[in-house]
View 1: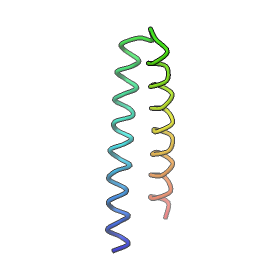
View 2: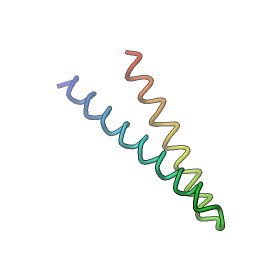
View 3: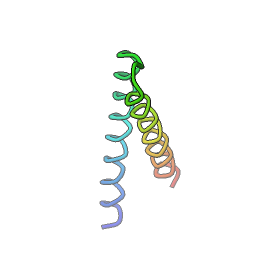
Length: 61
């Protein structure tokens, strides 16, 4: 059960990391015209940092 849960969270973290990277690429290429895009970019960076540190912790176990 524990390993299944770890594998499930690991898949979610990989998906979150991928989505954050794609989101950052999209906002980077569309430019930064509004405050809304800046907020989205900051949120994506936070998600990316959290998911990457989570993945590193999982793989270092």
